[in-house]
Length: 344
Image (cartoon, rainbow, N blue to C red):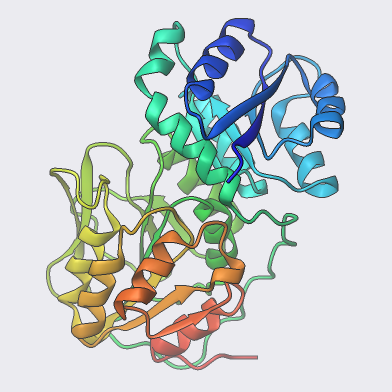
């Protein structure tokens, strides 16, 4: 297998040099070029035909977001965003992920040594991007109509996602009606990004979307995004239940972990609906199996519609997935599993 041919786009010469050193140290990655701004990068993309681009978010002239939009419209290819962990950087990076960027990594806040500490993650992210299936940005889905009938009183939807999950969650949640059951979401994402992610989803969705808080009661028509960082998110209490945000060791390599969330929802039995979306690795597979064994309905995103089929593929291989389907087909199936009838 040939190395992942990578083009680095960043206006900082020191950052370009740091990224190039880190990536070139992996024999499975070849840095084919470095560009200080999008106009130079555009020509290098034509000449060098890279497999992956690492793209700065904020640059003089054309910013990274505008350049990404052009890439995904004219020549879709895997893009990894580099962002500072600031409120502005988080908001722009979330928008980039919504537009189809495969993933985001943190830029060093002070010097190249900061990036060196995350060298393994950076290399893994670029190699995953090189194997991902990138498509033109999808047209936003029209919101679903209000639902007729009532869901089970104990219905709760649990969703896990990682690489490619931001775009997938925009598709899924904008299709949910205002009276849908509570939705609990673990998306692998830096802690500095989850509040901005929830706010951005909330602006686009008919339902309410918020970053989860410890002790929050579950409400109909509300989705809760697990805060990234040092805590797991669990379903606690009796119907309708509340959220528990607690510290803990890494589970399945992550914190928050999809497996931890799914295992807590498994206690809800037949009232649980588990959904595993695009993502690298296997987090959520074992927890989804526990949900299915407890009587919950379980769904997986199809390989053809995933950016990375790791998490859904692992769950499917374990027998945890009751039905596997395209991203566009999932909302109706999920709502039907909640006991609701689709209105017209």
